[in-house]
Length: 202
Ligand SMILES: [Zn+2]
Image (cartoon, rainbow, N blue to C red; front, side, top):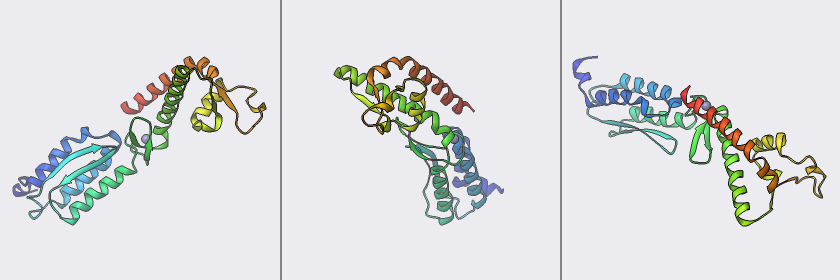
């Protein structure tokens, strides 16, 4: 690298972007680093005056802004953006955009599982609280529960005689059954919180 190259705003910005790798989700840092290497490889006098800024991460999307119109640089940055869209932001495995409750995240199946179950428990607890406010004894249909939740329910509070009702295809759980299982659900939620924290620290 010559002194002239080292001094260009474009190269200085690449160094700044490298220093800011810690700003972005851990699972995306590999792709981000690869993009910076490619940008450094194509840095030249013509591209020197143009600026790079970021990284910007919002709504589970990753972006680096560029002030120029150069197709090669734009191509590298577009590829980074597209790679992040299908890369688990926690671990870097292949992932997809998923609704985990609070905000969408790009996650692989392994990282998504505890979050989806946690969200299903949250929804069930909210429904239970609402039923208690309304004084309702309304029932929850098995088919309305996310599949992860069915597994939790089956092992604990799913009524043994649920399948002997008038409509065997639509077994139900009563509100009081869910209420009896509240402490178990809170324990499961705690275990899931620990599992999610462990994913972030790995
Ligand atoms: Zn993952």
